[in-house]
Image (cartoon, rainbow, N blue to C red; front, top):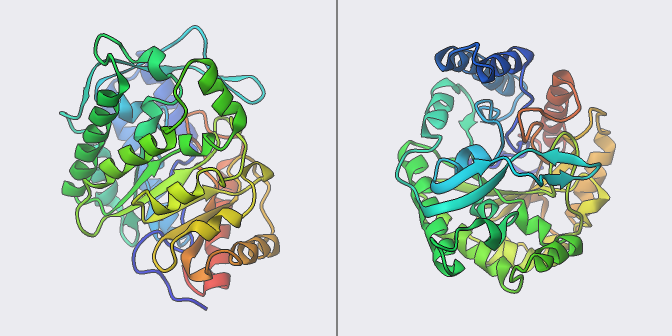
Length: 372
């Protein structure tokens, strides 16, 4: 048996987003319809977040999030708070598998910067309500501002070439990470889906078809991530979450981590990686051989957040054993493969099923590692 981890990520952890309770869904619908003031919505959010924190702690999780309850999207709400970035509703929407459309996109119409605090108040509320857990803040990776729209949605009048765009974006993120650090955050996660998308030949073909320069893109994204991570204070754990799309239980990309593994694990200064591994679309565990020995942690996303069926403990243990053939058990942990509600609509399972899956992670971690 290994010992309990002193710092995050923990042996049983989770990506971050949680299904919105019905009372919160109803309040948001009224607010959008103009029938509820924002202050009243905030009161409902506060109550629901406090309850979610207490629930996370009660089932034994050592890290707690606010469930992203104040957000519409896992990514747009944060990046729209940066100077120069706006969310809009396009005629042609992003299509997930099964023809499920994502309603909004991003565009860059000004110089990117970080002048106003973005979600710092979210973190402070979370931190003020945890009792036994470590407060965990999640934000999207900087690559989300580029990947889905690329050159086409970045105003040429502002950025005639993309090098200054990437520089400004990385610098803005460095300030954002520093701001969370100044607010006391010691566990920050960068949700980086687009590096996983680079493992899918169909996604690469799509980038090329719209005229993007694909060669070197992984290195550019790694550079922005490192620029962001450089803003952290001593004692802050930075984790990355990688997945292939998660919207109403649908997905976008497929492909194992082999094409990106060496850069991902050895050239990006992250302490930990939450890695989607709940389906064959994520490939095998062989890329874990690239993880540096001794300090970086891989959190195996073996429990799916897309359906309510509860995984078998024995099956999870067998998969952990398989992963341990490539990376020491000491450097492994367990979580769901993604959040349960990357957008406010949430995935197609119930809250009870969600909490059962998180409790399962805690139970399996205790049996495998001897501690959470």
